[in-house]
Length: 205
Image (tube, rainbow, N blue to C red; front, side, top):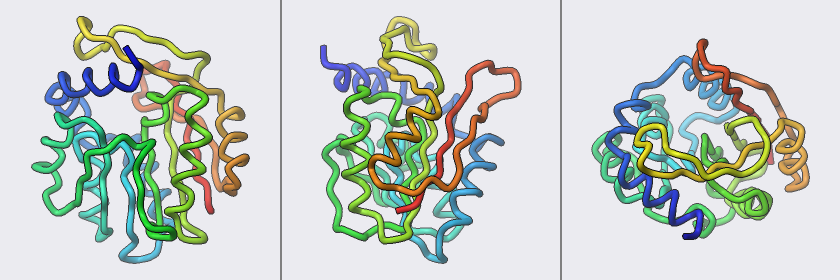
């Protein structure tokens, strides 16, 4: 089975459990989303790439931004449309999404790249750069580590999930190669008790 099909099927099956686990804004999300919106103009247009159940889209809407969310999981989007009814949601593979050039002020890409194969990352970040206006910002959060794995999904261990891991410099170099300017590059964690490290990169077109 292709990894993208595996990821989509798993998310369709765990959508409710995922929303229950991650549907509320965490301290991790709040501190990083605030850094992101500080770089945006008022009434900015945001692309929530891989929007899941719409938690982040809803928060951006509440802050007065215009939001379009994209995800390929029908199960996740069904919840997102209820969770953030004022956002526009599109069901599509993020690798194939298409928008007018210079359309968005910001692109929010949180825990999305980890579900792509390593050789798919650079083409994607080059592609979405066209949708950003000059000076627009890209936010990326993904797991630190090495390699690509298929492992049991922790929300339902009968299911499998595909993930790709990066080192901070490795991911930063890819974003620079796509001709973005790196504004911030840090390591964070989503929970104090977690040993899992998260790479956070904020970049500008």
